[in-house]
Length: 366
Ligand code: UD1
Image (cartoon, rainbow, N blue to C red; front, side, top):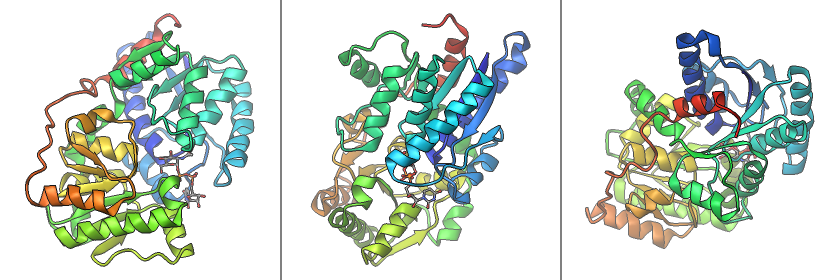
């Protein structure tokens, strides 16, 4: 099988690393039924610390095609990708195109492939925030509705698709990010704590990058206030700052709170170390919410809703939106040891999602 995998943004590199490793293992064991994977990098993320570092550190096969699309308004960025991916598919004539998650790269690749009658495999299918103002929600709904294989990470995702009348090709395989965590956890780079000048359990880790938070000055200021509450209670916040957020903070003259230590977006193995040793994490990232759960770290989500309901149900994750009072109440509960998440549930599979995906791709097409 000739498989074209399209990635473009940081969270996709992490997932692609795990699946590419499973493909390599499969090929080594069964050379007669090999999957030949070629990676297309759209260039949506182009800063070295959002892209290159991940390919090196996670040993992702080098992209066969680099489209160099870069940033831009949604229509322009997605449109440029669509045109460039269509050309690659035309030349390569793959048996399937594989996409991850919910970014503009996901949508462009899924649409380009479907229009050329090339079947699409969507990893992380079926997630919904039910908030159509999020670009990610539009991207994932549209990608799901043109996909042939819909690889769901959770039962909730399967149910979401069923409600939209999508059942064919749907499979709950578990979460490739959980597979990834089992692999990378032991490789976490603890030097990150030293570099950030923090000690184990002596800080709260924070990441902020969602357009809904960064592009609304009132929300961005409120999110910074919430981080200030954390710094007040736990002494220090380590804020791994996405370039989009950095730019908006400067444009809007919003300052980071006293006690917040700003670092560059962390390479994956440093991020895992910072997360595993934090008192708690405050984030608007989907991936970080789950990684916190895997590492049994309480998470305060700086959004009004989440796709990862399982983490909320067992009280591992509390939604604070951009409301410093809600953040404060969760931080108080944590400081006073009244917040005791139950991490015993295993809603994200058994750590073999990538193998299940490889096996499915080689079976008869749904
Ligand atoms: C994208 C995804 C989001 C994902 C996130 C992970 C979409 C709609 N959003 O958002 O779902 O959670 O990636 O990080 O696809 N920029 C740089 N350097 C880079 C990349 C971006 O400086 O390497 C800046 C640019 O100013 C750009 C802005 O960040 O305009 C936003 O980039 P964008 O492509 O919209 O992606 P993210 O915000 O990262």
